[in-house]
Length: 410
Image (cartoon, rainbow, N blue to C red; front, side, top):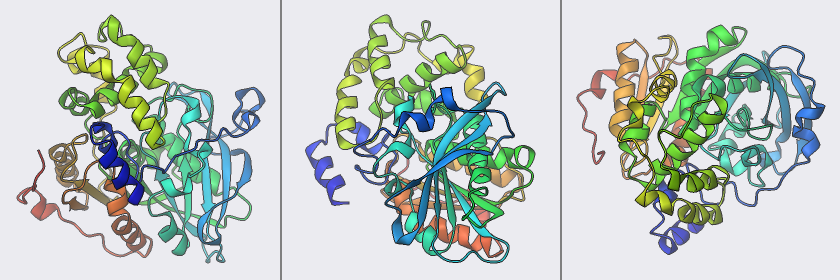
């Protein structure tokens, strides 16, 4: 944590540090190193086969506590139903697998970028970016960490497209079960932060229909991106909001064919292109992005509220997380000082889950901003997932959630 506080003091003017970075420490993805192109290359990939089947995998060094780790490439499903390849990382504990197989935790990562080279599986410090990894390894859990579609493999990444993220998460769990020495069972939980929180919630929504052979025991999220219309509308005048909006518009123009021309001022388009071709991985990246987004502070959107304009309005609504099956318990951690994913928005979503009958454990993180929400809640989240694997009754804060105070949340 020392480097975070030191650099934050040095770069106090870079508001993006506490918002769009979305990782526990500034160096979590630092020193990105491009893996061999042949591992990710679409030109050498056979896409025939069912979603979740392994295409190839290779050993990764540096896993904690004697664990074994692999970079994986597996089959999945694209946003138009087409077969695609997705990459990721699987971490396997060193202990002997129990009868029935090891439980699996699917880690859904926060925003790292929208172009291929921003894949977490390519980053030097990928293991440090998985919040709670050491504790999960100690508990004997396999961790399956997808890159999502278009990161590592051919891009662009369908940024904040919930169903795409969820299919990548579920197929990563399937792929982990095929690694010969994994000893994986069919029980899993999903744990995600920010963009990964959206991915985790959509995983809960799609698991039973997309991967019925798997048994999802719980969904844990920190500062999840739930209401995309609120995210793009309410944060439009912040550095973090401008970054998220720029990457969303740039990505969706390419993956959905939704044109930006009616929404983005002509003078702002070079800055949108620059931001969308940069990763979010290190302190240097954050400084670069601060300067890249400066033009957007004076001129960016040409429409007063892009969330009311088609096709963006419908696309945003399609990627807003809905209720989960009531049998799936949910853990939600939210920083009260979050200025990107606003606490009132997260609380409203939690209440929606409560109304649908889901048992929800809602945890306020006093004074915590967006970037550190997963780090500050990881131990609680892992303990909550452990209780799910041990078949304990899930805690439910729904009776008090609607009447409790929100502290310093805006």
